[in-house]
Image (cartoon, rainbow, N blue to C red; front, side, top):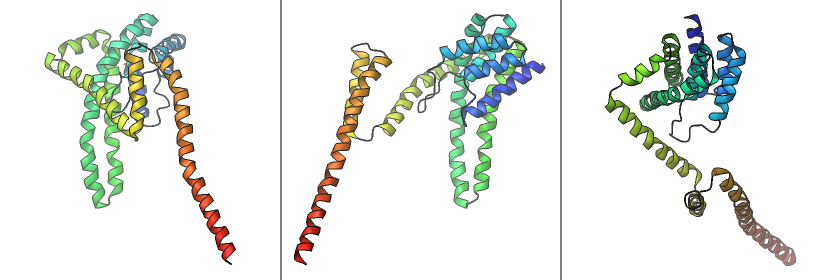
Length: 262
């Protein structure tokens, strides 16, 4: 009971960090602390290193909610230590993170309704009350990670399967559809923020063609994009400096003409 509470408390702290500084939310640190709490630091380090390599590139992009590595790492490590193996931890961490991902979608969709409330309060000038509203998503983020972690560790791995099977098919289908749409929306929002000039869409189309038609992975596309980005930056700088030099020359000419008139 005490161990379950301590691990769930640590998962909740990492959840608050996830919406803040994001310094302790990685699997390597999460699993290490879980192993320390459960009295098996070595196994916690091994599981954390394995999950860190597996989830190294996982992150939120725009409105896209990635699999919840916090809940997956905490539950997977705890149950893996209890079961005595890194393979068990990895096997439990993946489905747990995917299940917690659906909870994150509900959480992030729900806190959106706090925005108009904060706007109405801000119009009154009571900014202290606006600041206090920030505690609501923090508490919800804590509970979204802490409660499932406590239930899974306290009741064991069977609680996860039972929770998944108890959900109606309509809810699971709706969450799956929402999870499929949100990545497209997130990438679209990211493109709107990054691509401010029309000519930059050429690079997006080129990267898409390299990935789809030439079946290149991220690394070779990045290596191809680096010199192109460098050349584009040089051309842009040269284009921006030419009018300045021209205006400077014209100003010098005007000064000389004034001196001549005098």
